[in-house]
Image 1 (cartoon, protein in one colour):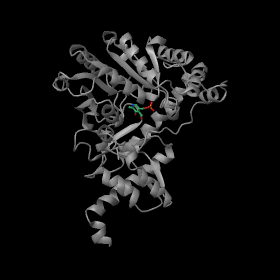
Image 2: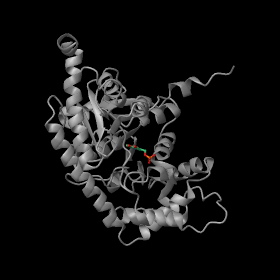
Image 3: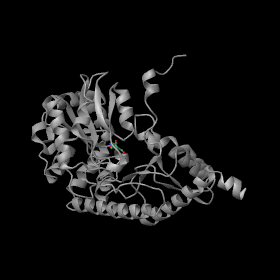
Image 4: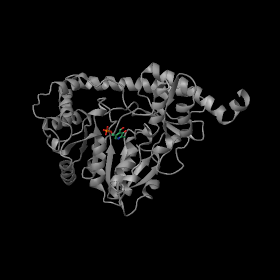
Length: 407
Ligand SMILES: Cc1ncc(COP(=O)(O)O)c(C=O)c1O
């Protein structure tokens, strides 16, 4: 019988979804599970977007143009214009989510066997995209104590070798919530320039910034020819199922290569591109985004305040996105997360994402977990109470206190 390739076997299953079956089992047993493990926003998708989808006048659902429907490209160009980024519609390609944008960016920047530098911890699917494109990830290790900001330039440059072709980072960061300062962005830009690298900024959380500002990669004119921006409407329009993202570059060769990649997969979803057009045509679209960001800021503040009250949890308040990467007072966070789903008593439990899955270096992140604060305030409060109780009970269970003391 033919076997699936080694390459497909090497593509990792998402660590965020790996424990999912345990949560299904827990729910079958009647438990309420607070899902802090996955970045699936719960806020309704904007009405104007949904109206655009519902009212689309389509008789034949044919292939959309490979680079994107012209009106949707114009809508995106207008969006970047509103963010003070001058992007022509020829410099945008609509992709099937940010996911496809990153895969295209890696395909364009690297040949098989080439290397890409990525700050870790990172969005775990980067490893999947890298494995599928046969690109090796060289991690730039960042740590919780520094709020996952970048190490000094020298430390990054020692990682660059003859096969290094690109730097890729998520900004704001998943799972870290880090928002790089202007100085950090300048450093990355300069490293890319001096070492002749592509620089790929994944800005799918570009609106989710709560402290200071966000310096987009596209503001740096000196890297116009080597910068690739990846964007998506999944998070800012609470539209993960739309599967609409974008790849943006001022480099004509990059855009020509991206256009070729796009023709191979024919087209991105039609209805959702029309939803985007309708959303951008709505005069209140900016207010809708801002209201959503206000809601996430309030959730971040509340969640961090609640976490501060849990003994042993360590974290720095994230500046952006909607995640907290925290240290737990346990040796093995995955064992704790599993236990919460299988053994924690009572009618409710909490699900987190184990930290190790966000690192490529074995051993890192074992005592860490990522929480996504994508629940309403009351649920976040309740989830934190359950988490605090779970941690206290788990530590007594593993030290034998409960077995020996309470039988
Ligand atoms: C950092 C980052 N990049 C890309 C993606 C992929 O998003 P999309 O739904 O646009 O494919 C995600 C999704 O969670 C993400 O967190």
